Image (cartoon, rainbow over all chains, first blue to last red):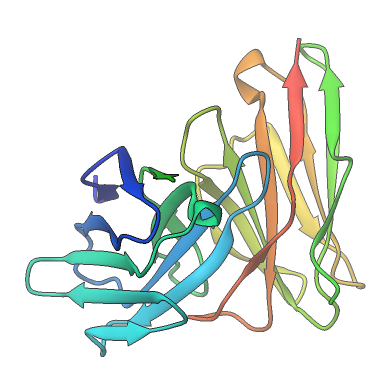
Amino acid sequence: GESVGLHLPTLSVQEGDNSIINCAYSNSASDYFIWYKQESGKGPQFIIDIRSNMDKRQGQRVTVLLNKTVKHLSLQIAATQPGDSAVYFCAENIGDSGYALNFGKGTSLLVTP
Amino acid sequence: AAGVIQSPRHLIKEKRETATLKCYPIPRHDTVYWYQQGPGQDPQFLISFYEKMQSDKGSIPDRFSAQQFSDYHSELNMSSLELGDSALYFCASSLGRGNTEAFFGQGTRLTVV
């Protein structure tokens, strides 16, 4: 079936470096995408979202890129900090009438000093 | 700021028992979503409610039911519990349906023994 998936299960970066987490989705009808950060034992925390009529959106230290042609989503984190260590999920809205997120497999980001 | 409140935080039940999980959305939020996250898994969408009516339905087993009450809080009722139901159950809330940010609670960890 259609699904959202991540290319890499784990990513290790040094503090201060930039991080790039990738995501591939297969539902071409998806029009809303979100990146979530989840720390151990906590609920997913919203990072940034993007609608399908955009190809780039920037937040504080984070940028999401959307390539609808190849159905690819990425999250860029600038100057990665130890507090960024967590599991990152991309999600697409698959709800017919509202908001039902299909989460991809998470990527564990480990920031080393 | 008020967040999504879930209770209980931890619950231990025996097989074939029933469990009720509660979710109190952020004040004025009218939409509630339930997700199940197994160990090392991505969150799976179960069901959502908007203005006390079921909105979208995901992979919710027939043994589970949920509803949203007049004060917008929601309850997830789980019967004939199985070992495989052991998971983190997250509730999220948003203002309105459609493509809008949803805020997650801290989750209820259900352990079935």
